[in-house]
Amino acid sequence: MKAAVSLDDLVARGLVDEAEAPALLPVEQSFRIRVSGAMEAAIWAPDDAVARQFIPSVQELDIKPDEMDDPIGDEVHSPVKGLTHRYPDRVILHVTKTCEVYCRFCFRREAVGDEGHLSQAEVIAALDYVAVNPAIREVILTGGDPLVLSARRIKDLVARVAAIPSVETLRIHTRVPVVAPERVTGDLVVALESRLTTVLVLHTNHAQEFTDAARAGLRALSGAGIMLLSQSVLLRGVNDSLPALENLFRELMRNGVKPYYLHHCDLARGVSHFRTTIAEGVALMRGLRGQLAGPLLPTYVIDIPGGFGKVPINPDYVVAGDAAREWRITDWRGGVHSYRDPET
Image 1: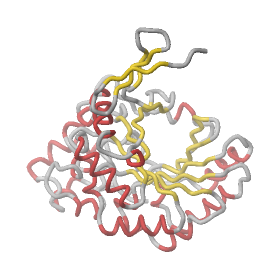
Image 2: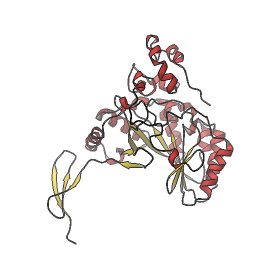
Image 3: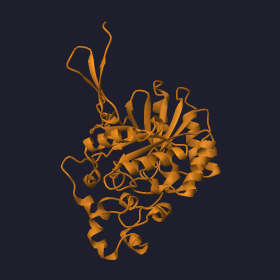
Image 4: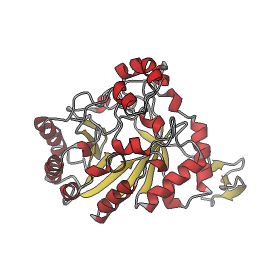
């Protein structure tokens, strides 16, 4: 299990100023801290786009009344330990609560690092649930970060999922290829091989996170036939600008990763300083449509607080007009055009 680090560690590594450390003690007591070597090297300046994601801040102590311990409702839809069954055809398997980094905006920040990995008995119980529910076609491994597990354990887990006839797809949500690229070894790539369609969803929020080692790891994964998608979080002070998002999505595509989701920041405790307004996010997506080709554009989504699922947030390109069958369509430059449906 990857242990959290202390403020003293961050001071010793030059990531936190010694004079600022006492004010951060309450943050350390509330939320775990961990910064990988790759992300430490990717920090170019204090409070830059990478530092803001991983270095603790006193702003985390400002907890708003509407912020939640479990903002997306994992526990509401948990039939057995470690499993979330929110949608009919897929489940989330929380195989570990450990990560290589602890993001300061994480929607599971109350739980990550708390209990380590699921035991073998708990994994078997979760997959027994999947096996007796044949409507489940996809198993999504998350955590924590599932790729902190050893290649041997991952190989065993993949084999157990593949042994369930009704399951067709294995999806893995991870930060590892970027934040700890040394873990993307030949043994790991082999461990992911199975009859299943394997999809790796890379969590990354800024082009500055990409190192040569990360690019090499992504090439190894795509070369093994693994589909690569991304998920990012819209974060104030990190990527809430057209240049930052454009650079991120272009960097992803250069490395064979399809931008998949841009998440509106969740209502986790102590993250209000990261949250943009929905209107700001919609404006950014509208601006990106004029600058990026379709394959580079993710879907902007929000998880409805309380466990009600994820829905897209779309700019209003098409709205009903004043007359019957009339629509008003706005192009990416802001021009408005009239369109009529056929008579029925």
